[in-house]
Length: 130
Image (cartoon, rainbow, N blue to C red; front, side, top):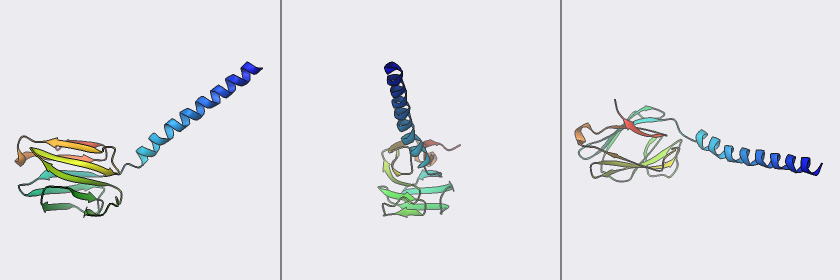
């Protein structure tokens, strides 16, 4: 009887630990924003095209460092409005800092040629533009 009770308690504890371990992962997945943006460095800044998940279609600006982008476009606010990332130029490419709505916190994209340097960014990361 004591062994049966101890076994029941142990099984119950394992189920509770498993439920607690699964919940944060599910919450993290559901907080990812859905967006699809093409990032293209230009001679004097960046040009972005949003294919899905934004209130804007295109953005461009002169300057290379720390511009924040969210659902509504360029922003100085810390409010995500679905997603928020910062975009900066680095030698031979660019880097992104995921602030909210992304599975990543930092990404780098290196390019051999600035004229053909494009990448697609979404909540999961970066990929080549085909």
